Image (cartoon, rainbow, N blue to C red; front, side, top):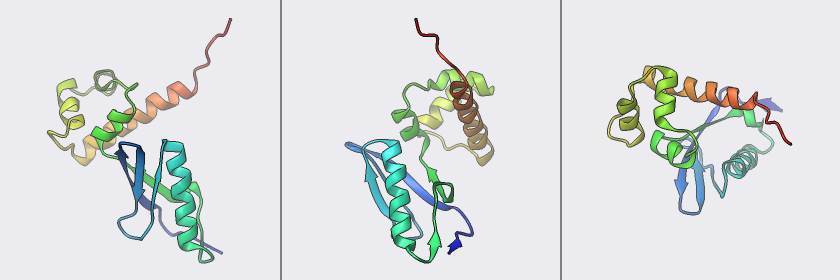
Length: 130
């Protein structure tokens, strides 16, 4: 069975009951109450669409969400903290988060790198119990 030549972009939107996801290029749609449920459902939907033609795994999907929805869902990530962490003006990042301004590709990559760095730091932390 063949593998996909490029990642399949899946757009994610926050809804009142969880999340929805869809591909702009292919008729692949799904929903989920949580992000992990959504990513699993999107993988299943892609596998059903491609059935015997391609082998599709989690690494073949690229999930994208806009800034406002990202910060709405991940409220634990403080925009001011992130701005300080990546050396960006907090007011400017706030304008991106609120949708008043759209970041350039370079700014978006800087923000995403900062988010990934914080995620990596959190993944490496162990808490002391008792």
